[in-house]
Image (tube, rainbow, N blue to C red; front, side):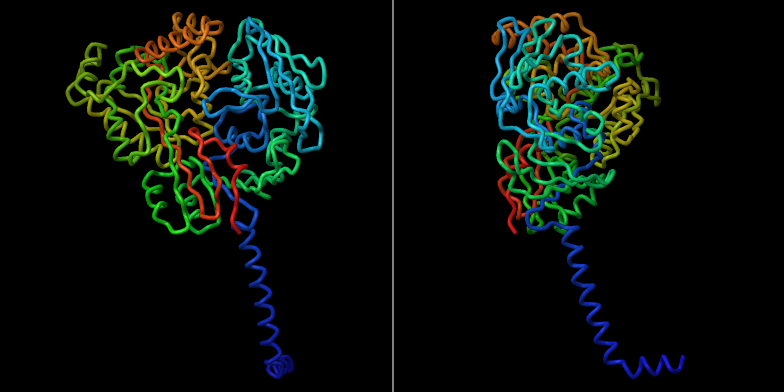
Length: 522
């Protein structure tokens, strides 16, 4: 031991130099790790507020999965700025006069990420596997009664044959990402598409890593690498942006107060436009209390949307009176609206057979919300407002996966939810309100049934545009009376980005296709 000590003392200057060299090496290594954990040149880091349940573009209509789909996959069609379907993987398409046959002519310059060249057999395979009996998918609800066959007469032509007129087919196929033939088994965990970004890796419930696809038919993205971090906690998402370890967040469920704070942070830009997504209360029409229409109308009159938008959402929303956004061609401005009228709410409750009982509530209901902080705040505001008209609300915050399951299974009385993107088209009425569209055949989670609405939806399939406008105006008026959904507001679409991010054109629903046009400063 003494000999060792003497050696150390004697060699002390050399030891110091060695330690200094080691520290320098560690510092450089740490800086390199820090760069990898943060953002580097050519690498964009986005944050998303919830997990992605599946990568398979034929399956989930969950908003997180749909945003991911827009990065990695293309459909035959896409939306233009007027929310209308236009060609994407198809270079053009045409419909027969009876709207029972649609022919799509494919682009000839498209490759999948596995270097397989797109052909009509891939499109046929995508739809036939999605429609297969044992394949669970919300997306096939649009086609299950209507689509008769998908044909591939040659490598560049796809023909959809329908059992009945289906003029909305080019819009209905829009969210179905095309996959290469024979890849069903891998798509949920190792997706392969034609999109601007290629899948690299996935750390479960933490991060998805993508890279720019050099052979993308519409031009290679300027971003070399894209990482999507899954960060459920709002304060952590905020911190990632503030310290620069994340570059971009699009409609990431930030508290409006957080958004106001981020506007003041040097190096951060916050941009907002009027949104088209729809926040609403879903109502279970099989519930013995809520099946009474006057009760639903009383709830609608008992919610003070204006004060919630002003005080909680900080003006970052607009009141909603329809499922459709105001910029949609079929929007009906004259449908019945529900201003805050607590006296009217109480009168309706009396008429429905739920009188005041001293200090006791008229009845009790459970409202399911997500666990996101802003969702809980909104639930608390609705709870207090409805208490004033005699309705006791129990809040039940749920993780997103459980909440979606309960909504689909009808295991709720009320739920608070935001529809993303789908309500930009009149096809939303069929998907959300047709009697035959109850899950798993659609998203009629309220189990709404109206023979008049069903008849109008059938007529809309063959009607010309002027008559279709009349039809959808009437449907909106009926829904405003029946209230299977209680429409609340259209949230503002908000993007938070670091200064190094440019070239981002905001889209009203928060669409992620815009990401491929982004440029990064070093």
